Image 1 (tube, rainbow, N blue to C red):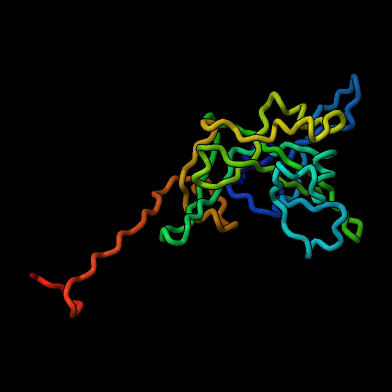
Image 2 (cartoon, rainbow, N blue to C red):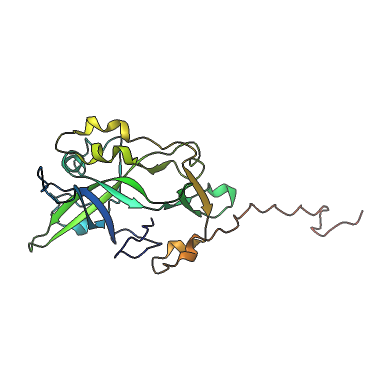
Length: 237
């Protein structure tokens, strides 16, 4: 994933699981007539940890949550009801992994909105309290079935929340998961554009903007023709 820099928040071109990501949540302390902004941004660990987890070492890393089942899953149910957030980004990376028989290597793609700018993924947030009393905000991105345009790359994609739906998505006080179920759908086919990029993106220490430079896609190599003749040597006749 990539987050685009805002004032006081540098651009990051290769965000990996367990690293901090920017999330936007409803400001619950705002009262009528208050000068406080309706939303606030915080940093959260990418990888949601439910509050009931005893030892995070024995718990799988949950960077994504399937939107179709999140409201029923024990790991995401409480967050879907009470802690829905927005995760701003300028795009995301996805890997296309061809079947082994094709002989093609896995290929990463940089996927961004055709119109540019920052978009908002649907996210969930949990504050995890460890046994020593320390707390950490954690988050996951909701995914849905890929649209027709991105299906050749991967069968899943992040849920994108349109600006006109921000308020409804974030309003957990008045909106239950069933009230926002219609928002968890693939974006239209012409929303994103995808570029093949170098596999340097697979190494978290690579963080430069050059990671998004398009590269040529590997093509399957043709097998050389078999030599004729019983000796195995090339025949001239």
